[in-house]
Amino acid sequence: MALKEQLDRLAAYEQSPYPVVSLYLNTQPNERGRDEYRTFVRKEFKTRSESYPAGSPERESLDHDLQRITRFLDSEVDASANGVAVFACSGSELFETLQLDAPIDQHWLSIGDRPNLYPLARLDSQYPRYAALLADTNSARILVFAGGALEDARQIENVKTKRTSQGGWSQARYQRHIENFHLQHTKEVVDALEGIVQRDGIEHIILAGDEVVIPLLREQLPKPLAAKIVDELKLPTHSPDHDVLDASLAAMRKLNERTDRERVDAVVGAYRAGGLGVVGPDATLLALTNGQVDELLLSSSLRDLRRLGRGRAGKMAVAADASVTQPAVASVAAGEPADADPDVVRLADTFVQKAQQTGARIVFIEDTSLLEPYGGVAATLRYRI
Image (spheres, rainbow, N blue to C red):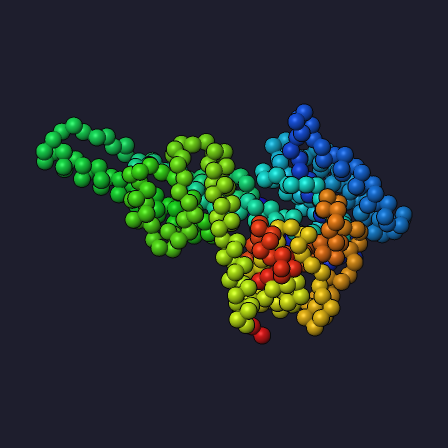
């Protein structure tokens, strides 16, 4: 299941009276080829379990979940997985797992009254779905990547043409013949790409091709498709999938660097003009709760996110969504930076939950200095109330 679909499912999960476990693990082996996450799991599971009264319903539910998670980690984790996420609450009949090609930066264990989705949303932002088109004048590959892995592939093969040494009119007619082959091939490739983009909701496309086919592709691409082109790479058509993934991910990260400032400047400008923009935790949470947010901008560092204030906007936000003031069943997630405020961690997760529930896009701003003056969060609005 795609990360976005998993986020949507888990965001719909209602708060539970029983402990909800959210576990994220980096399962990449160390330099000696050994897993390092098991030590983290044993230590944290023991201390978290002991924080509940022995014999209580909450303790029994949690112990059942931790045992089930341990069995899953011992016997069902794929050796090729670079990351694992588990969400469990036996008291509310929840047990969902993800095995990921994309690596998780650090281990993270959170126990609260709902799934902790901030790390999953962060991962979805780092490894989005996009398409890469590699083409020459007689073949093409359309690769769809998501979650740091190849999700789908389409191969197109047509007649391979050769140059001829004939001269005069024969050469000219043969050249037009070749050009017609190239044009028909290009149209077929564009049609296939357009179908995949529409089917999968692709927002970004990476192009790679030779000096003959790239101009042809540019001429044949419909304007909506051309607007999705992120970059043109110098990659052979038959490059290995992992080389295409590495090069295209680098291009996607450069796109984020270029657009981060544009997004923040647009939101701040709209806010200053009294238009469709809000900045700061208080106003943003209130807008999310009202379903007004179109695009949520979050700093990629939780250290930049501030607590809700005590002013009018902060009080209104709390009144509209009292869940952000309810303490988590257990302490802040293990693995989060040591100086992170537990209330801020919960607030960040609330932003993600609300955005998923209301269909708002989530964009993590990698240049943390851009949102730092505004408490690490801002949003564009669909409408004003």
